[in-house]
Image 1 (cartoon, rainbow, N blue to C red):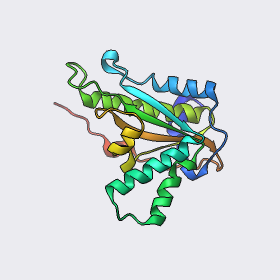
Image 2 (image 1 turned 90 degrees about the vertical axis):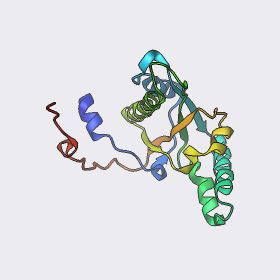
Image 3 (image 1 turned 30 degrees about the vertical axis):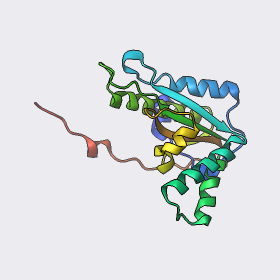
Image 4 (image 1 turned 180 degrees about the vertical axis):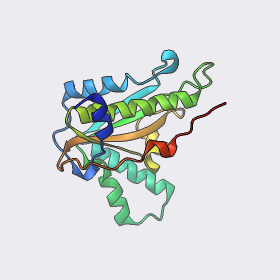
Length: 189
């Protein structure tokens, strides 16, 4: 399979299908190295990676519940328990953080955020290329100040996503892709 074929055939693995083993330390290093190969205007390196595994996943579940209660004190208990279990769906989570340099004169915040998004995509591709399943998840907890605080992030930082990684318990199913021509315009000036 060529690299282009691989990119065109990449699919997310639902978190419920991600089992152990997760990447080992050497594999994780390679996956994160791919993240740092993302485009990066002015070499700001506007990313951080937080790896969450083992018992830390339970603690993250507790943080998700706390954040949900702060957002909505009336959230039903059964749904809070579902929220608590979300980080347990995969053996490893890589939180990709946009580490923003505010008011940079050449690389505006949006470019730094996009660079962190590109790092997340590189991480997905690398994990998949190494035979792991992965999915990029966001949701209210990725935008929550309480979650950011619990992860030790500054107010200027953004959680680009939580990338769940593990060994897929299901075979990858090809998905149909849209025709790029549906999104294409040729500008003629």
